[in-house]
Length: 157
Image (tube, rainbow, N blue to C red; front, top):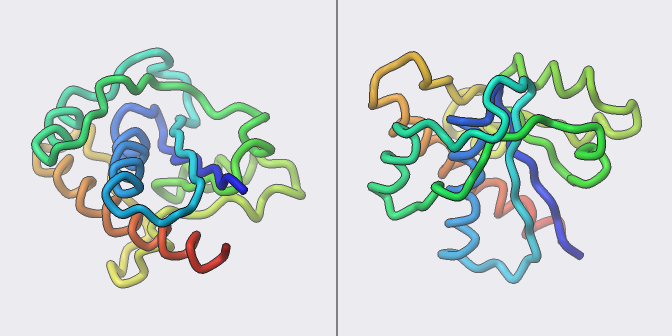
């Protein structure tokens, strides 16, 4: 059975495409034997069709992760059927996803950092208006949560 995971932030050009790319890289580097598909989307249509923020791409590239083929899209109603998990980067997007989700699919919506409780944080901060180190911080957070997500998916098979 293929598990499908959707990473979600506001515009789908910083945090959620970074999470998608990092998670795909983890799947490649740390094979689990699981069939997992990953995608990302935004709750707002600000950047639909755009590539990820150049600063996110550069930070990921420094770690050997390629994000260049990703393009922003918006969360669609069908995503609540297609994906087993919709993982929000922050509380605002979490609440938005819950508001969009059919009642019987709300259990699929979670905060991504729930998979890294050792971090003591609930949100991946938006690096868009910050300095370059913000993108490095996002990479660190999503890698840690990605490992936790992979472990949780493996444990639930």
